[in-house]
Amino acid sequence: LDFCRRIPKIELHAHLNGSVRDSTIRELSTGLEGGAVSLPDLQRLTQQASRTLGECFQLFDVIHRITTTHAALTRITREVIEDMADDNVVYAEIRTTPKARPEHGMTTESYLDAVFKGVADYYAASRRTQDIQVRLLLSIDRRQSAAEAMGTARLAVQLRDEGVAGLDLSGNPSVGQWETWRPALEYARQQGLKVTVHAGEVWNPEEAAAILQWRPGRLGHMCCLDAALEKHLLDSGIPLELCLTSNVLTRSVPSYADHHFPSFWPGHPVVLCTDDSGVFASSLSREYALAAAAFNLSDEELQQLAVAAADYTFLEPGERAALRERMEAALLVES
Ligand code: 5GP
Image (cartoon, rainbow, N blue to C red):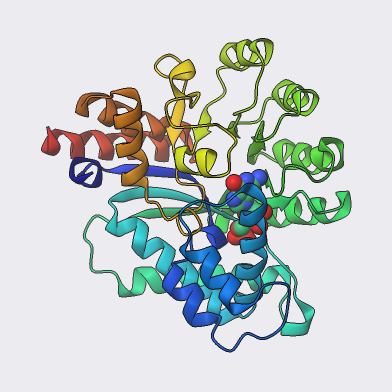
């Protein structure tokens, strides 16, 4: 784990509200009354080692009930970046669904302003010479209607010069239909934004095939595939965001040993990510260490994985090349 902590890393699949510190969840939920989950349930959910996919989405609902103020959003954003930087993450794409909460005076725009303020607060307080670079991805939640999804896509396009690098489709994989959100994703892509899509978290071969055919810039998870879909994915060359702990804890894959990582790497572009470092009590270093243990990866292979991730970022080509150079320069120091 110490070696994994020291190598510079790139995080491309991290949900903002899934990356909140447990201590912050407990602090912000003090005095929270009513609702679907009681405080003891919340304590249990944040402390248990394993959570089913259903329990995870229950926990997201709780987290969303305590991140309703602009101040809370700004705080969690700053803390998530602090934790990543402490873990030697040098570049991160953090994703979040902008949420309007009229009862709290929050619009989707002001939600994002609060997140941007968290990014700015992090840099204002940071004393690092070589600091983490951060971009945002806006997530369409699968609960959203076609019109809401288009609203999220339009916001992403409007904010691309403010640090939004792309669009994501996520949310409970058992909810909704791909065709509902496809036009919004298509619009963003036509406007030049990069798109990543969660797929194959549960067994839904028709949807996974349709998403593959649409060819997103990256794909998240892709755990539940048959041989034909796996071949289609391998042929596509689309970079794959793999989140070991998340996939095992939510039972999308039965165990680390059974994870589909070795079906793709080496040979296919793969990036190791955390998904929800708070909800799954992990870190990117830990994900690298788990991959090393499960698939017998050498230190050199871990470094190759880390550097290659630069090529799968949603940065502009020049920025991507600069990041790769920075990664390579840092690796020389390590080896
Ligand atoms: P937020 O967008 O509120 O910042 O982050 C939490 C949200 O990310 C969850 O409500 C859910 O929509 C999405 N999310 C987090 N983890 C997962 C996951 O493992 N799978 C899927 N499909 N969505 C997720």
